[in-house]
Length: 279
Image (cartoon, rainbow, N blue to C red; front, top):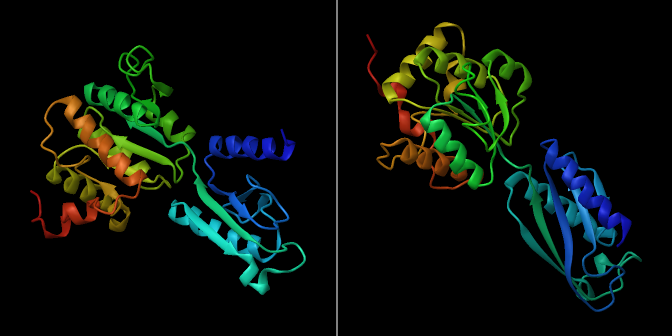
């Protein structure tokens, strides 16, 4: 096998492990005289650097620009170049013919950190793991955060402070706050809103969420920091049992991951500004 071909996939494995995004452009069909061959590939990283090639010249420049957009939107696209009819593509590298290139996003595996080791957390860990999320669990009680209760978890922390220090949330990180009490929820949220996590969700009622927000605002945290928090966490499906709640949260995680257009953001659902002051 072509070593360059192998190197690209080794690079993809490395990038996904490190939480980096990219796009892979692959020649999927050719017709006529093309100075490359089907299955030629080019990897475009988020910083614009490239590895591999799909033929060079103006075609490659257009594919590079499309790849950057694919990374931004996380949506694949197919490009067709009719080289016989576009003299501008003839720069000595391409002789003519038709070229089809498929550009797909390369995304890190999503990482879900569950803060709290109760029944909802166990069910959520199972559901999220089945949906393709890597799972981490944080609870300050070793009896609740352990491999026996969470066999699907790749990371387990028995100290919130250690978790804050070691976890480095990125655009592929999801944080769900389901601790045993309001105080711990608020402490985790204080840390979470200062991270680059893609998703932050907190269990509890609207009233609880508003109370927590206002308490943190009094500490000096800007109110806009809470605009991206999903609270109450999970889709409103009337869930009652831990398993049902876990399904509602997992569905919301998937919706955010897949950029579902119908998923309502917390700032639209909570309407905190319209709520009366709490005593």
